[in-house]
Length: 128
Image (cartoon, rainbow, N blue to C red; front, side):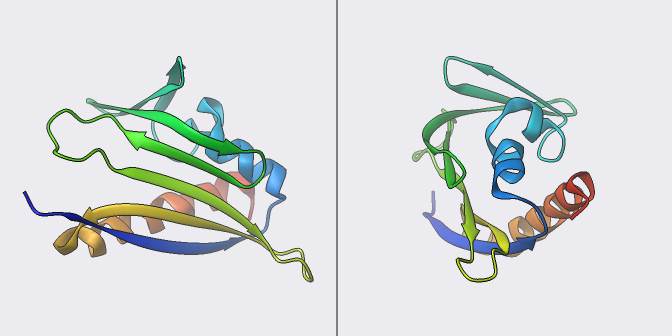
């Protein structure tokens, strides 16, 4: 199995960091744009898309700044993480969402495309 590479994406959003944090850290927020349905049990988030279910453990959370999840995948040698960071420019107060994810090197372009699509849904939901 080849090793996954880390990649980062940044998306400016017209939103408050409080509203954005809710969208990336709660089951209700995540089910509006990231997955069809999201539930939580003991810090394990259960994401559902059509007939697929994935689980991720919440491993780090700092209010209004970041959320880090680790996928719970038994079929992989390494459990990979994905993170949401909320950046607020101290001068302009503009807010951006930074996504840190991991993918096989030849899948980074496809993963970037998927994130772009999901962020477009988030923008619509936020009116941003």
